[in-house]
Image 1 (cartoon, rainbow, N blue to C red):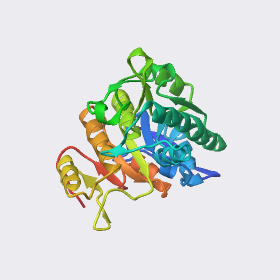
Image 2 (image 1 turned 180 degrees about the horizontal axis):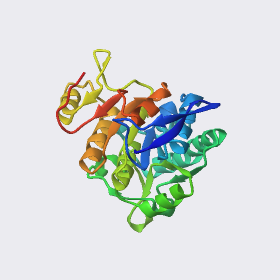
Image 3 (image 1 turned 90 degrees about the vertical axis):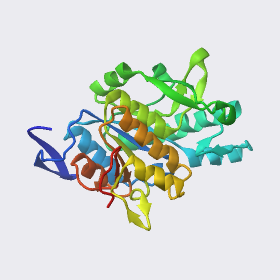
Length: 287
């Protein structure tokens, strides 16, 4: 990113920022966070998001999950649900609840939070405008209507972004014969990042991938596979790191797992500073 830009030191003060080595040089930034952090993110997180959009000139796209809230609603409605390798088994009955929770209450809650910080936001699911088109995953006989994104409506996204909207996307997709699919939010975010060749940030309530209570600031594919084999990485973290590696293999320039409870982490990532865990394909220093 060449030349001078500006950014907010706090909510009331502006000062110039000179682009420095390490700062990402992109137009778009894909930000994914799960339902477990929707209500935890501090107000400062959204302030930093506004800074990145307005003063760095980067256009963010938010992709959200909602696993805990879906599980809670399924329990209330007495609908049985199970998981296979971190992916929810999705029947027609489960899919109705998934769509209601993701595209309804969670999506609109995030949109309201963005509006509170003067960020123009528009909520949508991957079904809207055929934003995310999908086909069933290979394990569909075991996990039901779970999809793998095979096409992203980039022109729709760019139209919204050009109007300064921040798309807030729930990870449902549409397939052949208008079949809905539940898509893991991490893999949906990965597909969008790949389509736009944009950096991808997974926002969590942990500081990154930890081994022996120490954050690994860089992890390559070999390290990720070793940590999965040793069950240091398990459950819902497995599709997250696999989505990260897949994104890197399909043109995404950078992927990181960041701590959303630390609002400075998002801006630190944009500035190329050490934060969270940056995931690489090739061997890097692991500490």
